[in-house]
Amino acid sequence: MDRKELQILTDNTRRVADEIIKKSGVKLEYLVGTMIELPRAALLANEIAEVAEFFSFGTNDLTQMTMGLSRDDAGRFLPDYVGQEKTGIFPDDPFQTLDTRGVGMLIRWAVERGRSTRPKLKIGICGEHGGDAASVKFCHQVGMNYVSASPFRVPIARLAAAQAVIEERSAKSARKKKRAAR
Image (tube, rainbow, N blue to C red; front, side, top):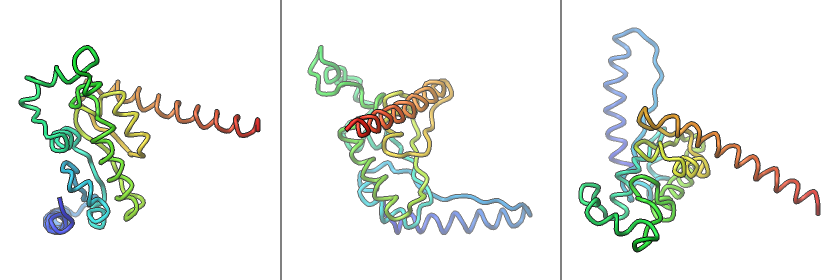
């Protein structure tokens, strides 16, 4: 949740890893980064990126912390919040499809701020959102490098990533044609 905390952990990680690598006699390059699972970490992403070489958004935890919802208890009341046939507060279960209006705002902020400090910062997500088509498309829109998903959801993630690229290229092509017609 803080640059100083990550610096302490990074120093310890590198000390231990470098010692093991040296003993093995193998040349191995590695990155040290952090999970962004707390709203504070997302808000301070520019400072954290001074140390982190990658961010991986833990979207389930970030959703839980941002929305003040417990995944363990949400099953009792969340069905009443989801879908237009009920209250319509959420269009989808926020633990299945990323809440791009709220949690997504923090993610977008963190991506922009992190890359303002470290332009080549590797960024992705892990968790069930990585296998949800709408969430994967959002990840592409904000410029993430990767998504991680459970094995059975990988085909969905790959298809959604390909669709996101095609949709982006189609939109760019349409904008070019519109400008050329003027």
